[in-house]
Image (cartoon, rainbow, N blue to C red; front, side, top):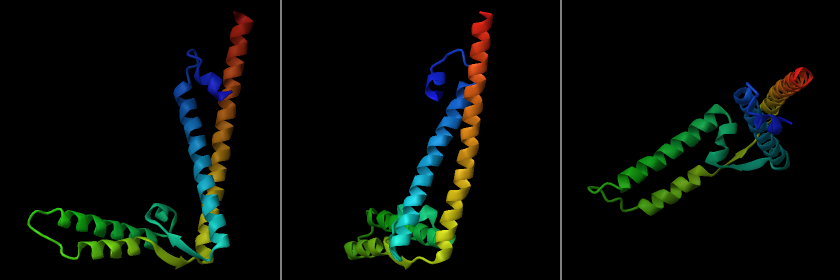
Length: 150
């Protein structure tokens, strides 16, 4: 129904509807990703963490991954300098790749953090769903009153 309303040029709350609809999709995607992460953590006590997955981790791990990324950027800048030649560049590059993919043992607190994040997102998703339902009902009421009057 929301998609039909988006095509109605007479509906004055299209921007707000688009905003809620986009938020609804984003929340669903984030919940799915976190649930997959949690499921993976339940099946594997030792997990390989990549920089892309770092946003779901603790502050300490995020900081570590940010530092590794910065180190990689610094090495690239240094290597691209016309005045400096890094003789062991490839060895350093391999070391950074090893640093980027660390193995950690996941403790229960991280799993609980992810679980609570999922629950918070589900509550927010429920609120967004309610707003979307309200907007659909509002649209139907206005449309039926126009049809009754017109």
